[in-house]
Image (cartoon, rainbow, N blue to C red; front, side, top):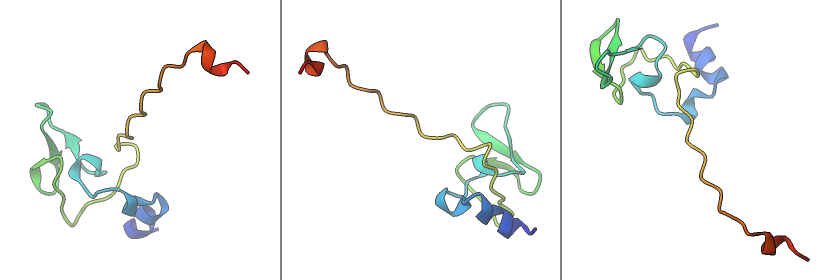
Length: 76
């Protein structure tokens, strides 16, 4: 299976190609960048042509807070 087929398997086209989600990248110790074995130190929002999507590195959006309900709203 090629890298292109693998990325389609995980629906990578739905997400931005950023170094923070790349299989090769490791978080930098200072937390502001990514250590890439191909390009060196990169910003976490940049990307290159060697990008490979890693679904385990993606951070899902936070769920919204639910509104507070009162017991009177559930009476019939």
